[in-house]
Amino acid sequence: MNFKDYKVCHIYGQQTWHDQAIIIGNKEGLEQLRDMIDLAINENQSEEVFFPVDFEGYTLKVMCVEEDEKLEHLSLPYHDENYYTKSDDEISPENILKKSI
Image (cartoon, rainbow, N blue to C red; front, side, top):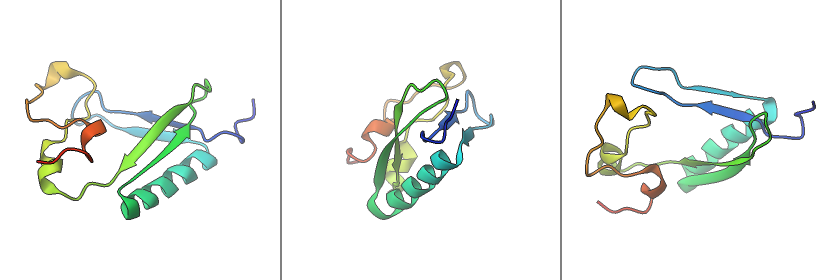
């Protein structure tokens, strides 16, 4: 299979605190991720479609947030909610650039 025509990027999040987060991709995918980070630094956010190796495309959004108040309330990235309790004032990543605190 030839993946050169696709921006391959697998993002493995943390299940709990102190777990590794891992990003694996081909050159095209990692270069696009780098460019997205540069764009988000300059324009607050960027969005691009990537593919895991099963070709089920997904949209990745990269956001730059400078406000301490928003960062303080950003929901934690862990997948296993058995290890932490969500707080009532958490801001989801989808709303971080919209919400005023």
